[in-house]
Length: 64
Image 1 (spheres, rainbow, N blue to C red):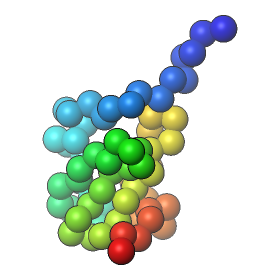
Image 2 (image 1 turned 120 degrees about the vertical axis):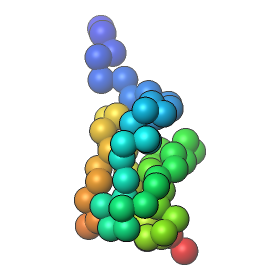
Image 3 (image 1 turned 45 degrees about the vertical axis):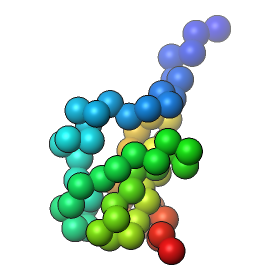
């Protein structure tokens, strides 16, 4: 069976260059262990599901 929906374990660096936090418009960093894009400015972590970043504030996890 083909693994067409394999989730990569890294995020394309070019994607990080164009994506910004939807709340602060600031930069994002990739947390490989949690598979999330992190906005330090907004203190939010945006999930990546099946290789797709979910850039909605209501879907993000608050960082302590």
